[in-house]
Length: 421
Ligand code: GLA
Image (cartoon, rainbow, N blue to C red; front, side, top):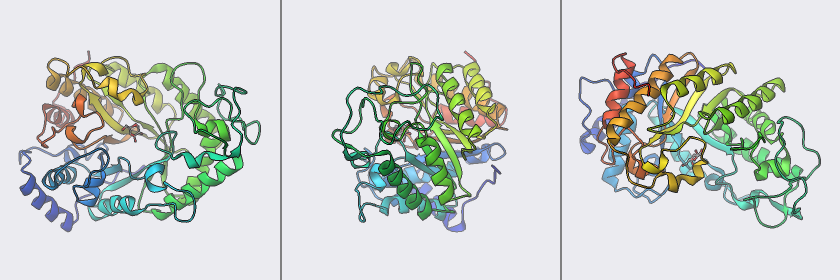
């Protein structure tokens, strides 16, 4: 991907200046912002919630911000970042909650895209096919749900599904009768064509499939309703449909826990299989929800070296660093266990350890800048983060820069020595 760093439009610059006055953020005038510091390396982006996209204090995305706070959040976005991702509003549950002709709610997603265009930001679409935040009707149909036959996901991705409807044992899947393979493929295609088509040329890069890989065990693929109903080629089909809908969009496969060698091996197996089948997967999205204690610099370095062997750009898609004591185990835990990982209070010396770990991460990203083309923080500040209790971001809940921001900016100029614990 060609890196062309964008600048604020005159309108955006005025807005940013006004918002900065309101918000009173304390970025020193002589220090570069994040996007300035990294302009020769990669995009630096942020996930934004509905309050920011709509400039309102609506209670959304589990966020409760006053209008003044939203203005402060927006000022940080415009000051430091040149790329945005939607935290929730393009997920199936939000944009396409109902079946049928009146099934879509485009308003918040349109606001997100318009926010990006008016401020000249590179816009990401997240996400088209995922087992999470997908309404039950998508998987429902008239086929009786089989009980125990064909349990588990195949160890090898890429094979076509055995039958027209071989869902097997359903863990965490929808209750009641299921759609057939053909019905679910038709729904997937319609959804992808409608959503990708609506924002064609505006959303530049899509997370086409999110989190399809199994944690633990030997199966490559997660035993999701997509796998159960369609079979392993649901991934290839999703990429083909997205490519039909916008041939110019950069299509990503996105997953978490790639710092874990076993999960990373599965990802490499999956992507190689897709590449052999000429599936248009164009970038690897590595979520990078990590903690202050793990991974080490060497672990991040090894992760990026192995991912780069696939020959695709790497996008760090959901970066945050958990400082809660509950989040200091390994990176293999399913992130749906988030509540447990943010318990126990903060680790000792949390601000310094956060700064050290962010320095490690960005030092590794720069080392691999031939592959790493984008780094997206998963939220503007600690108050709006899904892991708020783990204080995982570069700004505190009042939009004040934390020592980690300074550490990241110093790494860009070659100053900050990362701590390779
Ligand atoms: C996953 C998803 C994100 C988000 C986080 C938790 O990483 O990809 O969209 O939901 O979980 O907030």
